[in-house]
Structures are given as C-alpha cells and as structure tokens.
Length: 148
Image (cartoon, rainbow, N blue to C red; front, side, top):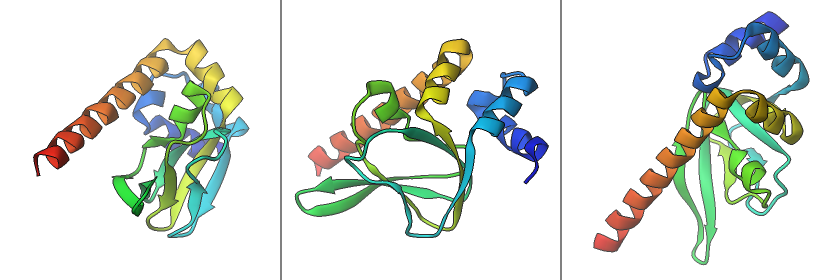
C-alpha cells in the first residue's frame, strides 16, 4: 500500500480526521502496517504496553482472563483504537486482543502515540471520549450481570 493510501486510511479514523495531512503522512511513515490471521493475538493480558493499534480492516475480540477461563467482553471493528490504555496508564496490558477474522492494523509505537496526544488536543479528547464510552459500557454490563 502506498503512503498516500495509508494517509487516506488514517483519515477515516475519527480521532485522526482533524490532523493535517503532513502529520498523517508522518504517522503513516513511522507506524507499521501489520496483518493478523483469525485467532492470532495482537497482544496478551499482562504483556508490556509498547504500542497502540488502529484496526484498518477486520475485527478483533477483547478477552479477559478470569478464574473460570478466558471470556470475550467486546468485539471491535474498523477504525477502533486498541492498546492505548496500557500506554496511558503505563501499566501492563489489561486485556488480550485477538483477531476475530483476518485483520489489518496500524501499529503505533508508544513514543509516537504519546507525542501525538501531546501535540493534538483534539486527538487527546477523542481518546478520552472513547475511554469514557468503554467505561460506561462496562458499568452497564456489570449492572446487568448483578441483576441476573
């Protein structure tokens, strides 16, 4: 895929929409396009948080290790950001991310991701909104489980 095509892919991701094309080109150039087969893990719960991923094509499952085995808590599709929580909190991965189907993602190094957040307040706000939405969904799931 050409650099221009990568930039066009990034422009489809809501949090990157307002970033100027020159910066997107730099992001595409400094990031790595990676392919995952269905069932292949991006990373596992407990791994060091060294990168964030943007799903360009395909779907990925969010899995948690529990005393009763691994459970699926969510499935994410195109334009979803994964792996940012460990980077932001500087902690090991809180979940496993596994490709549900063949999936293409953009791997953004931790240093580059943090630099983008520092330079683009609108991107930081988009990430915070996404994290708040996930927390709200998790809270709703917990309420539903405790009611049953």
